[in-house]
Amino acid sequence: MNVLVRTPNWLGDLVMSYAFFEQLERLLPDAQIDVVIKKNLVDLMDLFPMVQNAYVFDKKTHGSVKGLYQFGNQIRQTKHYDYFFVLPDSFSSALMAFATRSKKRVGYSNEARSFLLTQNPPLPKEKIHRCRKYIRLLEYALKTEVQDFSNRLRAFPKPFAHLNFSSKPQIILNLQSVASSRSMPLQKSIEIIQTIRDTVNATIILTGLDKDIAFMTNLCKHFKYPEDLIDLSGKTSLMEFTSLLYHSDLVIGVDSGPAHLANVLGVSSIVFLGAGDIETTVPYEQGNLVVLREDLPCSPCVSNTCHLKTLDCLNKISLLQLKNAIQKFL
Image (cartoon, rainbow, N blue to C red; front, side):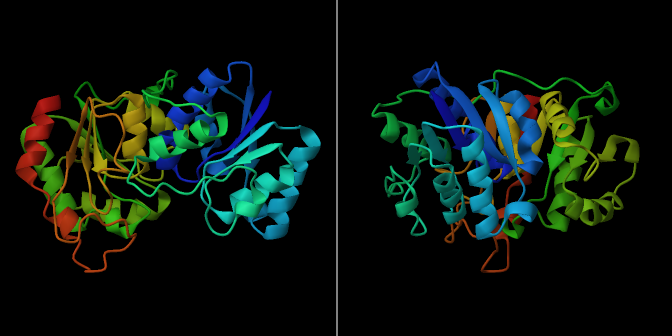
Protein backbone atom coordinates (compact mmCIF):
# COMPACT_ATOMS: atom_id res chain seq x y z
CA MET A 1 0.00 0.00 0.00
CA ASN A 2 1.21 3.49 -0.87
CA VAL A 3 0.25 6.49 1.26
CA LEU A 4 0.95 10.13 0.46
CA VAL A 5 0.63 12.95 2.99
CA ARG A 6 0.49 16.67 2.21
CA THR A 7 2.27 18.08 5.24
CA PRO A 8 1.41 21.37 6.94
CA ASN A 9 3.04 24.53 5.64
CA TRP A 10 4.45 25.94 8.88
CA LEU A 11 7.19 24.60 11.13
CA GLY A 12 5.02 24.45 14.25
CA ASP A 13 2.18 22.68 12.47
CA LEU A 14 4.60 20.24 10.84
CA VAL A 15 6.07 19.07 14.14
CA MET A 16 2.57 18.85 15.62
CA SER A 17 1.81 16.33 12.85
CA TYR A 18 4.52 13.93 14.05
CA ALA A 19 2.03 11.93 16.16
CA PHE A 20 -0.13 11.55 13.03
CA PHE A 21 2.80 9.95 11.18
CA GLU A 22 3.57 7.60 14.07
CA GLN A 23 -0.03 6.45 14.24
CA LEU A 24 -0.20 6.10 10.47
CA GLU A 25 2.84 3.83 10.61
CA ARG A 26 1.29 1.82 13.45
CA LEU A 27 -2.10 1.42 11.79
CA LEU A 28 -0.73 0.66 8.31
CA PRO A 29 2.56 -1.14 9.07
CA ASP A 30 3.05 -2.40 5.51
CA ALA A 31 2.47 0.95 3.83
CA GLN A 32 5.11 3.04 2.14
CA ILE A 33 4.66 6.57 3.42
CA ASP A 34 5.67 9.51 1.23
CA VAL A 35 5.09 13.23 1.68
CA VAL A 36 4.55 16.44 -0.23
CA ILE A 37 6.40 19.13 1.69
CA LYS A 38 7.45 22.73 1.25
CA LYS A 39 11.02 23.29 0.17
CA ASN A 40 12.07 25.17 3.29
CA LEU A 41 10.97 22.31 5.58
CA VAL A 42 12.15 19.23 3.70
CA ASP A 43 15.37 18.77 5.71
CA LEU A 44 13.29 18.05 8.80
CA MET A 45 12.14 14.80 7.19
CA ASP A 46 15.46 13.30 8.33
CA LEU A 47 13.80 13.14 11.77
CA PHE A 48 10.67 11.37 10.44
CA PRO A 49 12.00 7.80 10.01
CA MET A 50 8.65 6.45 8.82
CA VAL A 51 8.77 8.65 5.69
CA GLN A 52 10.41 7.05 2.65
CA ASN A 53 10.24 9.73 -0.05
CA ALA A 54 9.49 13.44 -0.30
CA TYR A 55 8.07 15.44 -3.19
CA VAL A 56 9.42 18.94 -2.64
CA PHE A 57 6.89 21.67 -3.30
CA ASP A 58 7.90 25.26 -4.04
CA LYS A 59 5.15 27.89 -4.27
CA LYS A 60 7.32 30.07 -6.47
CA THR A 61 7.32 27.34 -9.11
CA HIS A 62 3.93 25.70 -8.61
CA GLY A 63 1.88 28.33 -6.76
CA SER A 64 -0.75 28.92 -9.45
CA VAL A 65 -3.80 26.71 -9.99
CA LYS A 66 -2.19 25.35 -13.14
CA GLY A 67 1.09 24.77 -11.32
CA LEU A 68 -0.62 22.94 -8.46
CA TYR A 69 -2.45 20.68 -10.87
CA GLN A 70 0.70 19.99 -12.86
CA PHE A 71 2.60 19.14 -9.69
CA GLY A 72 -0.08 16.66 -8.64
CA ASN A 73 -0.21 15.19 -12.12
CA GLN A 74 3.56 14.65 -12.06
CA ILE A 75 3.14 12.66 -8.87
CA ARG A 76 0.37 10.64 -10.54
CA GLN A 77 2.70 9.71 -13.39
CA THR A 78 5.37 8.66 -10.91
CA LYS A 79 3.38 6.49 -8.53
CA HIS A 80 -0.13 5.34 -7.67
CA TYR A 81 -1.33 6.11 -4.15
CA ASP A 82 -4.04 4.33 -2.24
CA TYR A 83 -4.41 7.18 0.27
CA PHE A 84 -3.65 10.88 0.10
CA PHE A 85 -4.05 12.60 3.47
CA VAL A 86 -4.41 16.37 3.17
CA LEU A 87 -3.38 17.92 6.50
CA PRO A 88 -3.66 21.62 5.53
CA ASP A 89 -7.19 22.98 5.29
CA SER A 90 -6.53 24.92 2.07
CA PHE A 91 -8.24 24.54 -1.30
CA SER A 92 -4.87 24.37 -3.04
CA SER A 93 -3.72 21.29 -1.11
CA ALA A 94 -6.96 19.48 -1.99
CA LEU A 95 -6.56 20.42 -5.66
CA MET A 96 -3.09 18.90 -5.64
CA ALA A 97 -4.50 15.73 -4.10
CA PHE A 98 -7.21 15.57 -6.76
CA ALA A 99 -4.61 15.84 -9.51
CA THR A 100 -2.77 12.78 -8.20
CA ARG A 101 -5.98 10.74 -8.66
CA SER A 102 -5.17 8.90 -5.46
CA LYS A 103 -7.86 6.31 -4.72
CA LYS A 104 -8.84 7.82 -1.36
CA ARG A 105 -8.25 11.52 -0.73
CA VAL A 106 -8.87 12.46 2.90
CA GLY A 107 -9.15 15.99 4.26
CA TYR A 108 -11.48 18.23 6.22
CA SER A 109 -14.33 20.06 4.51
CA ASN A 110 -13.16 23.63 4.09
CA GLU A 111 -12.92 26.36 1.45
CA ALA A 112 -15.50 24.62 -0.79
CA ARG A 113 -13.04 21.83 -1.57
CA SER A 114 -15.17 18.78 -0.69
CA PHE A 115 -15.69 17.82 -4.35
CA LEU A 116 -11.93 17.30 -4.69
CA LEU A 117 -11.83 14.77 -1.86
CA THR A 118 -13.34 11.32 -1.45
CA GLN A 119 -13.52 11.47 2.35
CA ASN A 120 -14.16 14.88 3.87
CA PRO A 121 -15.29 15.02 7.48
CA PRO A 122 -16.38 18.44 8.81
CA LEU A 123 -13.89 20.49 10.76
CA PRO A 124 -14.20 19.74 14.50
CA LYS A 125 -16.69 22.06 16.18
CA GLU A 126 -15.23 21.62 19.64
CA LYS A 127 -11.78 22.80 20.65
CA ILE A 128 -9.18 20.09 20.17
CA HIS A 129 -5.42 20.27 19.99
CA ARG A 130 -3.85 20.47 16.54
CA CYS A 131 -2.16 17.08 17.11
CA ARG A 132 -5.53 15.45 17.78
CA LYS A 133 -7.09 17.26 14.82
CA TYR A 134 -4.65 15.59 12.43
CA ILE A 135 -5.13 12.18 14.02
CA ARG A 136 -8.91 12.48 13.62
CA LEU A 137 -8.42 12.27 9.87
CA LEU A 138 -6.77 8.89 10.40
CA GLU A 139 -9.59 7.75 12.65
CA TYR A 140 -12.16 8.82 10.08
CA ALA A 141 -10.42 7.24 7.09
CA LEU A 142 -9.43 3.97 8.74
CA LYS A 143 -12.54 3.63 10.92
CA THR A 144 -10.62 3.26 14.14
CA GLU A 145 -9.95 5.11 17.38
CA VAL A 146 -6.60 6.34 18.66
CA GLN A 147 -6.73 6.59 22.43
CA ASP A 148 -3.28 7.57 23.62
CA PHE A 149 -0.40 9.03 21.67
CA SER A 150 2.69 11.13 22.20
CA ASN A 151 4.22 13.80 20.03
CA ARG A 152 7.91 13.19 20.69
CA LEU A 153 10.54 12.40 18.08
CA ARG A 154 12.36 9.09 18.17
CA ALA A 155 15.20 10.30 15.93
CA PHE A 156 17.38 13.26 16.88
CA PRO A 157 19.78 15.67 15.13
CA LYS A 158 23.52 15.30 15.34
CA PRO A 159 25.53 18.00 17.14
CA PHE A 160 27.37 20.68 15.20
CA ALA A 161 30.70 21.53 16.83
CA HIS A 162 30.57 25.19 15.79
CA LEU A 163 27.31 25.64 17.71
CA ASN A 164 28.79 24.78 21.10
CA PHE A 165 29.74 28.18 22.47
CA SER A 166 30.73 27.69 26.11
CA SER A 167 30.78 25.37 29.10
CA LYS A 168 27.95 27.39 30.66
CA PRO A 169 24.34 26.34 30.29
CA GLN A 170 23.01 27.40 26.90
CA ILE A 171 19.61 29.06 26.75
CA ILE A 172 17.93 29.51 23.38
CA LEU A 173 15.81 32.66 23.28
CA ASN A 174 13.32 33.05 20.43
CA LEU A 175 11.38 36.30 20.74
CA GLN A 176 9.94 36.84 17.28
CA SER A 177 7.30 35.13 15.16
CA VAL A 178 5.92 35.44 11.66
CA ALA A 179 2.81 36.92 13.31
CA SER A 180 3.20 40.32 14.98
CA SER A 181 0.69 39.28 17.67
CA ARG A 182 3.12 36.58 18.81
CA SER A 183 6.28 38.70 18.57
CA MET A 184 7.73 40.12 21.77
CA PRO A 185 8.04 43.94 21.84
CA LEU A 186 11.52 45.42 22.20
CA GLN A 187 11.22 46.78 25.75
CA LYS A 188 9.74 43.55 27.06
CA SER A 189 12.53 41.63 25.28
CA ILE A 190 15.11 43.76 27.09
CA GLU A 191 13.43 42.99 30.42
CA ILE A 192 13.33 39.27 29.63
CA ILE A 193 17.06 39.11 28.89
CA GLN A 194 17.86 41.05 32.05
CA THR A 195 15.68 38.67 34.08
CA ILE A 196 17.49 35.66 32.63
CA ARG A 197 20.87 37.21 33.42
CA ASP A 198 19.80 38.05 36.95
CA THR A 199 18.55 34.49 37.50
CA VAL A 200 21.23 32.22 36.04
CA ASN A 201 24.80 32.39 34.73
CA ALA A 202 24.25 31.14 31.18
CA THR A 203 25.00 31.87 27.57
CA ILE A 204 21.91 33.31 25.86
CA ILE A 205 21.58 32.52 22.16
CA LEU A 206 19.15 34.66 20.20
CA THR A 207 17.51 33.00 17.21
CA GLY A 208 15.23 34.20 14.44
CA LEU A 209 14.66 34.47 10.71
CA ASP A 210 16.30 36.85 8.27
CA LYS A 211 13.48 39.32 8.87
CA ASP A 212 14.40 39.42 12.58
CA ILE A 213 18.05 40.43 12.14
CA ALA A 214 17.44 44.18 12.51
CA PHE A 215 15.35 43.64 15.66
CA MET A 216 18.00 41.40 17.23
CA THR A 217 20.82 43.78 16.34
CA ASN A 218 18.96 46.63 18.03
CA LEU A 219 18.18 44.43 21.03
CA CYS A 220 21.81 43.45 21.57
CA LYS A 221 22.87 47.13 21.69
CA HIS A 222 21.19 47.43 25.09
CA PHE A 223 23.54 44.96 26.82
CA LYS A 224 27.14 44.68 27.90
CA TYR A 225 29.12 41.41 27.95
CA PRO A 226 28.29 40.36 24.37
CA GLU A 227 30.23 37.10 24.78
CA ASP A 228 27.28 35.78 26.80
CA LEU A 229 24.67 37.09 24.35
CA ILE A 230 25.05 35.54 20.91
CA ASP A 231 22.85 36.54 17.99
CA LEU A 232 22.31 33.72 15.48
CA SER A 233 19.22 35.15 13.78
CA GLY A 234 19.33 34.28 10.09
CA LYS A 235 22.64 32.41 10.51
CA THR A 236 21.64 28.75 10.79
CA SER A 237 20.14 26.17 8.48
CA LEU A 238 17.01 24.35 9.63
CA MET A 239 18.97 21.30 10.76
CA GLU A 240 21.61 23.43 12.49
CA PHE A 241 18.82 25.23 14.29
CA THR A 242 17.16 21.93 15.24
CA SER A 243 20.47 20.64 16.61
CA LEU A 244 20.98 23.90 18.50
CA LEU A 245 17.62 23.42 20.20
CA TYR A 246 18.17 19.75 20.97
CA HIS A 247 21.59 20.27 22.57
CA SER A 248 20.58 23.34 24.60
CA ASP A 249 19.75 23.32 28.30
CA LEU A 250 16.60 25.43 28.06
CA VAL A 251 14.49 27.02 25.34
CA ILE A 252 12.57 30.22 26.11
CA GLY A 253 10.36 31.91 23.56
CA VAL A 254 7.06 32.91 22.10
CA ASP A 255 4.49 30.39 20.94
CA SER A 256 5.77 29.76 17.43
CA GLY A 257 7.52 27.09 15.37
CA PRO A 258 10.73 26.90 17.48
CA ALA A 259 8.71 26.34 20.67
CA HIS A 260 6.90 23.41 19.08
CA LEU A 261 10.13 22.02 17.67
CA ALA A 262 11.80 22.17 21.10
CA ASN A 263 8.76 20.40 22.57
CA VAL A 264 8.79 17.54 20.09
CA LEU A 265 12.54 17.17 20.73
CA GLY A 266 11.88 16.82 24.46
CA VAL A 267 13.82 19.94 25.48
CA SER A 268 12.81 21.84 28.62
CA SER A 269 10.92 24.93 27.51
CA ILE A 270 9.26 28.11 28.73
CA VAL A 271 6.67 29.48 26.32
CA PHE A 272 5.16 32.97 26.28
CA LEU A 273 1.59 32.58 25.05
CA GLY A 274 0.47 35.73 23.28
CA ALA A 275 -2.11 35.34 20.53
CA GLY A 276 -2.98 31.69 20.73
CA ASP A 277 -5.33 29.23 22.37
CA ILE A 278 -3.93 27.15 25.22
CA GLU A 279 -6.38 24.36 24.34
CA THR A 280 -5.45 24.03 20.68
CA THR A 281 -2.09 25.50 19.70
CA VAL A 282 0.40 25.35 22.59
CA PRO A 283 3.13 22.66 22.49
CA TYR A 284 1.48 19.30 23.05
CA GLU A 285 3.76 17.51 25.52
CA GLN A 286 3.41 19.00 29.01
CA GLY A 287 6.08 17.14 30.99
CA ASN A 288 8.93 19.66 30.82
CA LEU A 289 7.00 22.70 29.68
CA VAL A 290 5.95 25.90 31.43
CA VAL A 291 3.47 28.18 29.66
CA LEU A 292 3.38 31.80 30.82
CA ARG A 293 0.23 33.70 29.89
CA GLU A 294 -2.10 36.47 30.98
CA ASP A 295 -5.81 35.71 31.13
CA LEU A 296 -7.17 38.87 29.52
CA PRO A 297 -10.70 39.82 28.42
CA CYS A 298 -9.56 39.47 24.78
CA SER A 299 -8.20 35.95 25.32
CA PRO A 300 -8.04 33.58 23.62
CA CYS A 301 -7.07 35.43 20.47
CA VAL A 302 -5.74 33.66 17.40
CA SER A 303 -5.37 36.73 15.20
CA ASN A 304 -2.01 37.42 13.55
CA THR A 305 -2.29 41.07 14.56
CA CYS A 306 -3.32 42.68 17.85
CA HIS A 307 -6.62 44.43 17.18
CA LEU A 308 -6.19 46.48 20.37
CA LYS A 309 -2.64 47.45 19.30
CA THR A 310 -1.40 46.95 22.86
CA LEU A 311 0.05 43.42 22.85
CA ASP A 312 -0.93 43.22 26.53
CA CYS A 313 -0.95 39.43 26.29
CA LEU A 314 2.85 39.60 25.96
CA ASN A 315 3.69 42.90 27.65
CA LYS A 316 1.97 41.90 30.90
CA ILE A 317 3.58 38.48 31.31
CA SER A 318 5.09 38.27 34.78
CA LEU A 319 8.89 38.45 34.96
CA LEU A 320 8.73 36.90 38.43
CA GLN A 321 6.97 33.88 36.96
CA LEU A 322 9.68 33.74 34.31
CA LYS A 323 12.36 33.76 36.99
CA ASN A 324 10.62 30.97 38.90
CA ALA A 325 10.29 28.88 35.73
CA ILE A 326 13.98 29.28 34.90
CA GLN A 327 14.90 28.17 38.43
CA LYS A 328 12.69 25.11 37.98
CA PHE A 329 14.76 23.92 35.02
CA LEU A 330 18.22 25.35 35.86
